[in-house]
Length: 80
Image 1 (cartoon, one colour):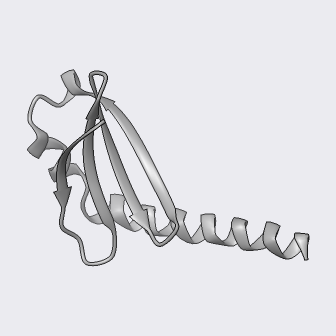
Image 2 (cartoon, one colour; image 1 turned 90 degrees about the horizontal axis):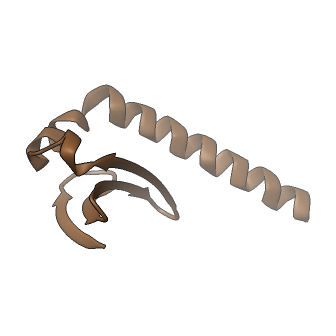
Protein backbone atom coordinates (compact mmCIF):
# COMPACT_ATOMS: atom_id res chain seq x y z
CA UNK A 1 0.00 0.00 0.00
CA UNK A 2 1.44 3.34 -1.05
CA UNK A 3 0.60 6.67 0.60
CA UNK A 4 -0.54 9.10 -2.11
CA UNK A 5 -1.48 12.09 -0.02
CA UNK A 6 -2.13 13.24 3.51
CA UNK A 7 -5.01 15.71 3.51
CA UNK A 8 -4.74 18.37 6.21
CA UNK A 9 -7.57 18.59 8.72
CA UNK A 10 -7.78 20.09 12.20
CA UNK A 11 -9.51 17.09 13.79
CA UNK A 12 -8.88 13.97 11.67
CA UNK A 13 -5.88 12.25 10.20
CA UNK A 14 -6.92 11.84 6.57
CA UNK A 15 -4.76 9.79 4.23
CA UNK A 16 -5.23 8.55 0.70
CA UNK A 17 -3.45 5.34 -0.27
CA UNK A 18 -3.19 3.37 -3.50
CA UNK A 19 -3.36 -0.43 -3.51
CA UNK A 20 -4.29 -2.97 -6.18
CA UNK A 21 -6.09 -0.51 -8.47
CA UNK A 22 -8.02 1.08 -5.62
CA UNK A 23 -7.78 4.24 -3.63
CA UNK A 24 -8.14 3.67 0.09
CA UNK A 25 -9.33 6.73 1.95
CA UNK A 26 -8.43 6.44 5.63
CA UNK A 27 -9.97 8.76 8.21
CA UNK A 28 -8.67 8.35 11.76
CA UNK A 29 -9.57 9.87 15.09
CA UNK A 30 -7.78 8.66 18.21
CA UNK A 31 -7.92 4.84 18.18
CA UNK A 32 -10.71 4.57 15.60
CA UNK A 33 -10.48 4.48 11.83
CA UNK A 34 -12.88 4.53 8.89
CA UNK A 35 -11.79 3.19 5.49
CA UNK A 36 -13.37 3.77 2.11
CA UNK A 37 -12.20 1.84 -0.96
CA UNK A 38 -12.91 3.15 -4.46
CA UNK A 39 -11.65 2.14 -7.86
CA UNK A 40 -8.85 4.31 -9.21
CA UNK A 41 -10.65 4.30 -12.57
CA UNK A 42 -13.65 6.07 -10.98
CA UNK A 43 -11.42 8.97 -9.93
CA UNK A 44 -8.69 9.67 -12.50
CA UNK A 45 -7.65 12.79 -10.56
CA UNK A 46 -6.80 12.54 -6.85
CA UNK A 47 -8.16 16.06 -6.39
CA UNK A 48 -11.64 14.74 -7.22
CA UNK A 49 -11.60 12.61 -4.07
CA UNK A 50 -10.25 15.45 -1.95
CA UNK A 51 -13.08 17.69 -3.17
CA UNK A 52 -15.67 15.13 -2.01
CA UNK A 53 -14.44 14.79 1.57
CA UNK A 54 -15.75 18.04 3.00
CA UNK A 55 -18.73 19.40 4.91
CA UNK A 56 -21.54 16.90 5.32
CA UNK A 57 -19.34 13.87 4.68
CA UNK A 58 -16.96 14.79 7.51
CA UNK A 59 -19.86 15.65 9.81
CA UNK A 60 -21.22 12.16 9.25
CA UNK A 61 -17.76 10.73 9.91
CA UNK A 62 -17.60 12.38 13.34
CA UNK A 63 -21.04 10.94 14.17
CA UNK A 64 -19.79 7.48 13.17
CA UNK A 65 -16.73 7.92 15.37
CA UNK A 66 -18.97 8.82 18.30
CA UNK A 67 -21.07 5.71 17.64
CA UNK A 68 -17.94 3.57 17.33
CA UNK A 69 -16.64 4.87 20.67
CA UNK A 70 -20.03 4.30 22.33
CA UNK A 71 -20.18 0.73 21.00
CA UNK A 72 -16.65 0.07 22.23
CA UNK A 73 -17.31 1.54 25.68
CA UNK A 74 -20.47 -0.55 25.93
CA UNK A 75 -18.65 -3.83 25.38
CA UNK A 76 -15.80 -2.78 27.69
CA UNK A 77 -18.31 -2.05 30.44
CA UNK A 78 -19.97 -5.44 29.89
CA UNK A 79 -16.62 -7.11 30.42
CA UNK A 80 -16.16 -5.50 33.85
